[in-house]
Length: 79
Image (cartoon, rainbow, N blue to C red):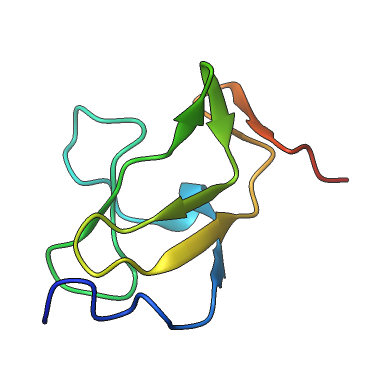
């Protein structure tokens, strides 16, 4: 897969809790659902987890549908 291949693809809506973890030690890093070898790291802004993220390899954009990840609330909060 080419670097940034999914840059202009539509946003994927996913549950972080259902994604495969990148390593057994990581609560946040997940395997990208759109490419092989890509990672979703869970973006933070001023210390808060952000609901929108992107793969560091293929640039696929995702929106996490979960309320929280590892007990930390995702922002913006959804009902």
